[in-house]
Length: 149
Ligand code: ZN
Image (tube, rainbow, N blue to C red; front, side, top):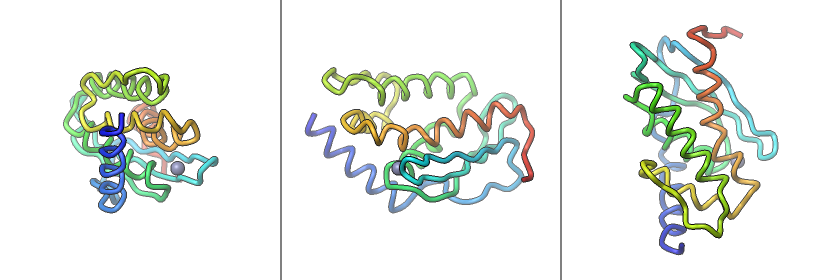
């Protein structure tokens, strides 16, 4: 697990320092805000979905290194994917970060997202890692309507 831990730290540091797909999206089709009061993480996820595919996705907000890095990696992972695959990825990611830390992680098709197996050892951090994913799902559940509040 020590290799995974080192990878976890370097990927999180990198994505926290230089978050990918950070900023406002012009004319999003879906948008939601999420916050994790336990840590103080707040973010907004914006998507452009067309023909059942995530054409573009961006996020804004502020939070701890894990929530920012997770949002950054999530946007990279879901961009260009059909919505059904996004849902599958969410399930796999959620299973990974909530699995028993003593068990070898099931990383399947998670790619870079596998580094978040590291949060299993820190239950308080699981919400930081999953915040962007829950916000993404909330945005998609809005059925195309964008709240202007
Ligand atoms: Zn956090």
